[in-house]
Image: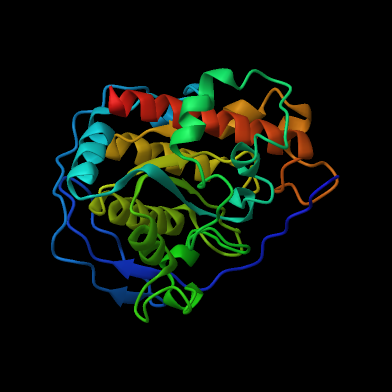
Length: 289
């Protein structure tokens, strides 16, 4: 069975004001809506990053280590009452449960052609969150969508919440995967950076560890989005899942050759779920050591 998932354009983003030490202020564009966040937020001083430089992002490892800053965020999140058995997704259609991760919540009906044994304890710890989308991963989401109040589900979210705020309030996750597309219809990497920076800073303010992810495609033609993601991972000293590197050995570098140059292939869906499980396993085990 081949699952075809399509993404559609987004709405405008919203500016979330937070308090994080040693980061650059986000610039607000004319279409954004300003929301307030709670006053009780952790202040984190980013440690000096001695890892590989962003310009070399293509050679960064697929599976990252837990950085010093990420460990601090995790520990503060535990003090804030976050759930050590929960993770959330802030993502586009390539992160929906129908094609991503769901099988790990159904080991009784699905068999893998690779050895899943080393990851069974991680699967058990996060049971119930693999076959779940939450409030901040939806069809059509781009980098602006999680920040947009009109994208929130009014049945579950408070009237003034964005999808991102709603999801983190409901799940209280210890880790948050951030993986978002950005169609280039007149937009720039700089605007993508503004949106992603707001998402990162709000996630940190809630005591959840952001896991940034590169993308397999290059619809912008110059890999500027992946470079931007690597720059922010470096700046904030955060783990980066290099999904681009994991996709390169696959046929057509993981991209479906019969579609639009963005959507990944059926083979890539399997590899994407596998490598993110490995990332979550590695980071979680380092966090609890």
